[in-house]
Image (cartoon, rainbow, N blue to C red; front, top):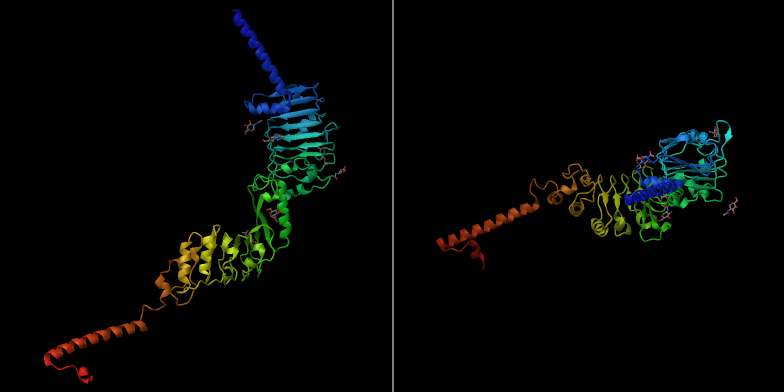
Length: 476
Ligand SMILES: *[C@@H]1O[C@H](CO)[C@@H](O)[C@H](O)[C@H]1NC(C)=O
Ligand SMILES: *[C@@H]1O[C@H](CO)[C@@H](O)[C@H](O)[C@H]1NC(C)=O
Ligand SMILES: *[C@@H]1O[C@H](CO)[C@@H](O)[C@H](O)[C@H]1NC(C)=O
Ligand SMILES: *[C@@H]1O[C@H](CO)[C@@H](O)[C@H](O)[C@H]1NC(C)=O
Ligand SMILES: *[C@@H]1O[C@H](CO)[C@@H](O)[C@H](O)[C@H]1NC(C)=O
Ligand SMILES: *[C@@H]1O[C@H](CO)[C@@H](O)[C@H](O)[C@H]1NC(C)=O
């Protein structure tokens, strides 16, 4: 019996220890939230105060006597706020003495009001620190913090913010701003972050270089991406075109965090602008160029102007191009990815050169040649047809690659890939009427029969009469 009693005492002591430890965990708001996350049996709700009720932590909303608020609380931490919407005014009305206010690990998506400068009974607020962290906040109401003339520190880490207007956090006293862990939209709208002048809002963002983009530049550093976008915008103004940053790849092996690590792919759209020549200037890192619907005839800039070296995708549909012979043997032809030449004036190609280039060019993915007046003759077409058949998967519009339309030509407007060799190489109308060669063949054949016949007749005549043929008698 005594033994059991001892065990009972031990168990009691153990229980007390566990309870004390739980209370210790409750002591720190950070540890508290973490503790709660680890043990997601979300029954743990309640409030706990410390330091003569100056410091209050509540989990899952306000509970017990705290529901009506308190004038002594200076530091208020709300974890796991139970609603999606938080009204700061309503909370601060109950706790007008608060200097540090935190909302952590909650599902709130919205603040229904801005932070007030004073509460109902004209008591001024003196809030110095605000933390809204680990919530689902996507945006802030306009002027959310602007009434807080004593705010020194603003922590907005680990929310779902996409962009922020710098004027919204331009408060003279505010020196420490934390913004990492959000879903930043890397666009020109966040250009303010680049302004690192002394005293600028951006210079007060302590974790400025830890800000990261969400889609479309997932995981890239906000600062680098916005800088690239701004440079592109400036350079684009020197063209008559629209420019867009389409993709940023990370070069493996390069030094971490250096700009060299990034490979930038810009797209420039100069379609339908009535230009007659290929642009002489393009923004750096232009890899895609749209030049469709212009009056361009000459492609030599592709090989002579170095800005085109990196332009691997080029769209030149509906221009006036008659020949691509100038690309023969060029660096460009060996490295391009997309070449779109629909609706031009091409009648032939340097077939051999193109085929040669395609053998070397592992990038080539997409060629369009349709709606051109291709010539169909025995000299050019057989080689061209071989090329089309060999690279059917590459020539995306092979069904539109047709012979030019020529009145009374039976190949007119036919798909080149499907033409038979005889249809290409026998001149028109050859099937009807006799050709000179045929006539000669017939004459020769008739002559052979005639001579054989004459020989047989002469043999027969000699046997019967013993007379030599007339022609033999005449030979001396
Ligand atoms: C937040 O939402 C998640 C999933 O929607 C849920 O599991 C969790 O309990 C919610 N937390 C609170 C404090 O409401
Ligand atoms: C916040 O300040 C604006 C003017 O700056 C004022 O119109 C507004 O009433 C203030 N809001 C509160 C809740 O104090
Ligand atoms: C934000 O989230 C990250 C990763 O989830 C975590 O490591 C970090 O401690 C969090 N920061 C804050 C201030 O909650
Ligand atoms: C920034 O300005 C403050 C005063 O406004 C000055 O004390 C500080 O030295 C300046 N810092 C730099 C890096 O210029
Ligand atoms: C071009 O790419 C480099 C990095 O590869 C980058 O530093 C530069 O800002 C980019 N320029 C433009 C206009 O995108
Ligand atoms: C290029 O710009 C024109 C308008 O100038 C537009 O119609 C066209 O869709 C754009 N093309 C691409 C690929 O963005």
